[in-house]
Amino acid sequence: MEIKQQLKLSQQLVMTPQLQQAIRLLQLSRMELVDEVRREMDANPMLADEDVEPRQGNAGERQAVASGEEGRNAPDLDLTRRAEERKVREVDWEQFLENRAMQPPIPSGRSGFEELPPIEANLTRPRSLVEHLRWQLQMNEYSEEEQRFAEVVIGNLDENGYLDLSGVEREDGTPTPDTTIEDLAQEAGLEPEDAPEVLRLIQEMDPVGIAARDLRECLLVQAEVYGLSDLERQIVDRHLDNLEKHNFQAISREMKLPLDEVYEAAEQIQKLESRPARNFTDTDERSIGITPDVYVIKDGDEFVVLDNDKGMQRLYINDSLMKLASDPKAKEYIGEKLRSAQWLIRAIEQRRRTIIRVTECIVRRQRDFFEKGVAYLKPMILRDVAEDEEVKMHESTISRVTTNKYVQTPRGLFELKYFFNSSIQRVSEDDIASEAVKEAIKKIIKDEDKTNPLSDQAIVDLLKQKEGIKIARRTVAKYREMLGILASPKRKKHF
Image (cartoon, rainbow, N blue to C red):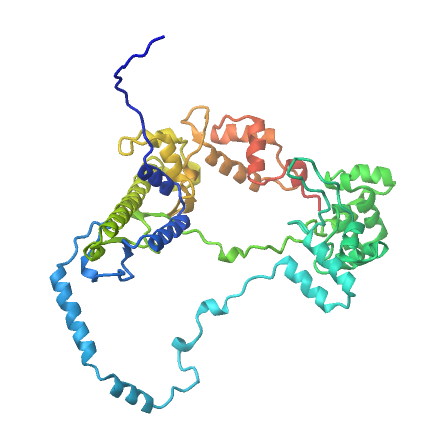
């Protein structure tokens, strides 16, 4: 054991705070970036945008770092500002206000579109399921205990409109026992024996079948309210499994009925709603909008990539604050904020350039898609873009750039991740992208005979014959489930 001094030269990657900030900004979505810029502007007095005057100094002394624009001559701007201030001081405000008071009042009638309220004041949102049910509660005469019980029931509905009585998981991982309607009644101060009756009244509200505990109860409530026959109610009550599988022969055999009668009853049962909350949502889909980060526009024979700066504040450095700092501590504080502002502006500009470069690479590699459509989408992975001669970035950077970033193209609005697909082998041609295969499967199922739908193996054979696509049956099943398409027995139209 001995002590020695030894010199060693090595290289290592150090994540500086500025680099961490650049990486964090790169993976933010557009809306998150707007919020981040607003927070930084509130916290940093050295930042100003083009729409807001700096806190100190005149507008001519701002430095347009983000846009790279050269500022106009400060003395000229200073003279212009002084001339405008002199004109303002020369206005006789007392005379102006006196003349204003002597003018006749503006008529209250609306004479044009300028006086109409803004369109935002006239917009409405669809009523949610909870609001719709509470409105019906107010229209009925319930006692105070029944009202509380109904509120508890409404608060335990799931997204499909069923009454969720399953237990929850504790912090230690152990589940709690399932709840009963009697437990809900005790919580609301209602007699437990009255709970089934009140629940039945709730289930007969609009939409009918709401607050049912399972599919069978939901359909039975609708069958009774809508006046379905006893046979149809028996099929729902006793043969729901065979009904879901379209196994009408088994129902006919067990109930000893002609197959035609079973068909007629099943046709009426299919008109019932299996998801009572289907037409209600807690989110107003009309208010959900995606703002693209970049645009792909066709100019002649070329596709041009443009960034979307609408709604984004262009940041400037407010250098005039430096002149006001006479205290050394104030200078140190302003210097720190100045460096932080410069790093933020550079990181935002670097983010913009990176997104444009990656999008341009995608457009070059997927030109057939932009020209002809989804069927011509080529297989592409992150490494293809990362190793491109005009990009030269790490795959993790490409992943951050393409996550939650959207591009508006002549073919529609897409997330940048959409263009990265695994390859599917063809028999004699080049490989095809998985999204193109999904589109081909969707087209085959759309054109099939609805009374005799194609099985997954039949789709495999058609893809190989028509498109030359070599794919396994389980892959077709996986893609079909991703597209939300049912299996062939459930797609069959019996009526």
